[in-house]
Image 1 (cartoon, rainbow, N blue to C red):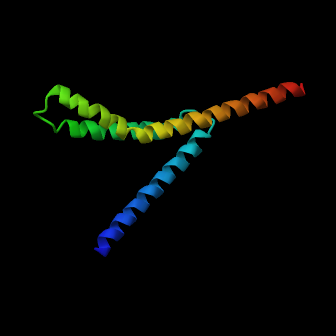
Image 2 (tube, helix red, strand yellow; image 1 turned 30 degrees about the vertical axis):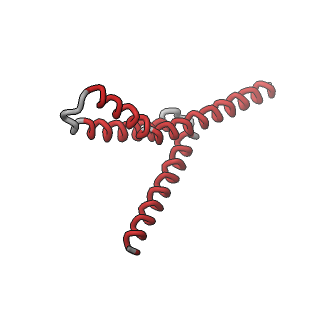
Image 3 (cartoon, rainbow, N blue to C red; image 1 turned 45 degrees about the vertical axis):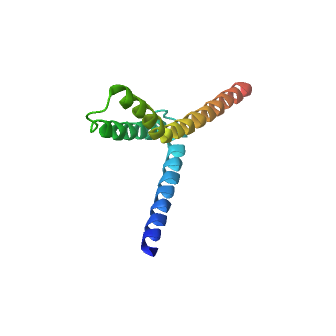
Length: 112
C-alpha cells in the first residue's frame, strides 16, 4: 500500500514539474523577438492532443456517427486545454513586447 501511494505521489510531482517547465519554456520562447518561436509548444500540444484523440477514435468501430461526434467534440476541447493555456501565454507576452517596442520607438522619436 505504501509503495502504491509513493508511486502516485511521485508521478503527480513529475507531472507538476513537467507542467511548470513547459510554462517556463513557453514564457522564454514568447519573449523572443521572433514571433514564431512562441508558437512551437502550442503547435506541439495541439498535434499531440489531436492525434491522441483521433487515434483512439479510429478504434471505435460500431458507434453511430451522432454518438461518435458527441463524444469526440468534448474530448477534443478537454484535451486542448494545455494548448489554450500556452496560446494565452504567447499572446500575453507578445502584447507586452509590442507595447515595449512602441514605447522604445516613441522615446527614440522624442530624442530627435
